Amino acid sequence: MKAIYQSTVGEGLTLTDTSYCPGCGHGIIHKLVMESIAELGKLGETIGVSPIGCSVVAHEYMNVEMCEAAHGRAPAVATGIKRVHPNHIVFSYQGDGDLASIGMTEIVHAAMRGEKFTTFFVNNAIYGMTGGQMAPTTLLGQKSTTSIDGRKKEISGMPIRVSELLATIDGAVYVERVAVNTPANVRKAKQAIKRALDVQQRKLGFSFVEFLSSCPTNWGLTPVNALKWVGEHMIPYYPLGIFKQPEEEK
Amino acid sequence: MAERVLMKGNEAFAEAAIRGGCRFYVGYPITPQSEIPEFMSHELPKRGGTFIQAESELGTINMSYGIGCAGGNVFISSASPGIALMQEGFSFLCSAEVPLVAMNVSRSGAGIGGIQPGQCDYNQVTRGGGNGDYHIPVFAPSTMQDAVDIIYESFEIADRYRNPVMILADGMMGQMMEPVVLPEPKTLYKDEADIANYKPWALTGSKGKANRNRIKSYHAHPAELEQYIDYLYEKYMRMEKELQRAESYHTDDAEIVFVAYGSMARIVREVLEVLRKDGIKAGMIRPISLWPFPTAPFEALNPEVTKVVISAEMSKGQMIPDIRLALKDRIPVKLFSRTGGIIPSTEEIVAFVKTLRKELK
Ligand SMILES: Cc1ncc(C[n+]2csc(CCOP(=O)(O)OP(=O)(O)O)c2C)c(N)n1
Ligand code: SF4
Image 1 (tube, each protein chain N blue to C red):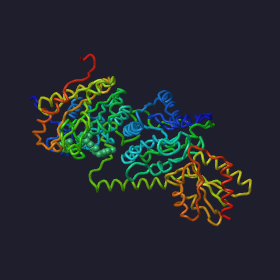
Image 2: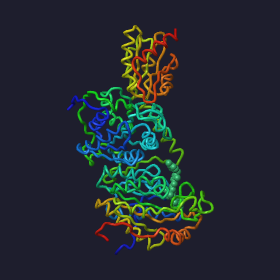
Image 3: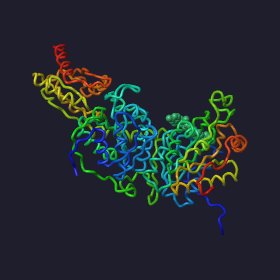
């Protein structure tokens, strides 16, 4: 009989309850990343880096060898790891405060050097762990604890589009933005992960997948409405799609 | 094979690191140590190693943390403001128990200061600017040979304690030429596949292991964190006992004992000769380890014989609290200091001693 669904719990993911809130995108993205690595048969030859943010504890759930990095520095740490183990799969997993604010230098330079690891970037348009402050990715008009009347362009500028920015860098070979708000988008997100890991395994350069994700807790929405909000507000400003891919695949 | 050569300080430091087992070097340009990354960029790849020029000192320390997590033996170097920028990383490496050998070829002043030699990073390196309860052993060579020997040994010290080790050499040492005997190159691990045998805790992939390795700094539960801090504290206390190093020169009969390290100790050695010729009994304690600060030579001083201790520094008395603790305040401590990148002359220190003796009488 053909299996229609294979759980990765106990394989790519550990048998642990996560600390993530109900409706949080981190859980879905963890599952997609680990399923993809498990399907490559590479769990034993993968090293991951978790960020500072709600997913600092990703190593509790992702069943591969991992370390934590200081806030924003995961791309530098992944660079070091990949230089020691060039044949392993190496990834950093980072939130938008971590990557697009305090760690912008490290991600840009890792891409510039064409480091042969993959970054999974979870954009939930807010600082989750610290309780809902404005991030560089917070949308115009979006309320946060440091922008209670909504983000204003005159004070905080426009939200940054990281995928588009990184796609301008030669060393970034694969750049795609996906969302985890609907079953169809979740399936597409997994395909993006697999393409990024393929680029890494072929040692073509830096690969990057941005996930538009939900933070119902700090958005003040129910899990269902949070997913709707991703579709209605985030996707129009952060368009989905492949921004960069190897020449032969175009 | 060991060989005697004439080398510039910074290049000798880099060569000693390669011979001591350094397989990775990460750095960012800053005077007066830029010859180290320059030398490493062309030498290390020839010897089977990897050179990375980082985008900043934050990049340097965090790439090195990654290399260390993955089990690679890594060496970094910088100078005072660059070391300042790395402090979060040092605290992180200590908390995650990741080894590293770092070198501070120090300059002078706070902020950007000046590029001439200085020793005013004493507090920065012995106390650390990072958060939390942590310690880093600091060794301060005073000749090129000392530097070569201690750098060579430091990779094993760092691995033994799973902790960063710091070498403090001022800019004068980095720039001078001196003959040195280079020790025989050693191999700490053969290749990438051998890392898991040499460092079973390192991240090498979980394949074939009973349990996967994880390296972490974050502890969500207070009781668990306190237990972990106590475990690390016990290790630091062991390091404090086992790593104290110093040299004493003519201290037994000395009425005046200098305390000096690094380039200052070289100058004071000349001062001792001049003073002794003039019939003034002077000696010196040269701390080699700055943390842990060596206490035994201070305990051995007799207040009946030694009337005054002089902390000779290119900083403003930063070493004095350590000296007073080691002496248990049994003998008064005076400061001789030049700063701003000015290296004092022998004559100037001799004159300082003669004036001080008159004042004390
Ligand atoms: C140097 C430093 N500055 C600030 C913090 C506090 N801090 C912890 S997590 C975080 C933001 C996390 O937000 P994000 O990266 O968006 O991840 P999320 O929690 O939303 O998944 C901040 C600012 C820190 N730990 N270290
Ligand atoms: S605070 Fe937001 S990002 Fe953090 S776990 Fe909860 S929902 Fe997820």
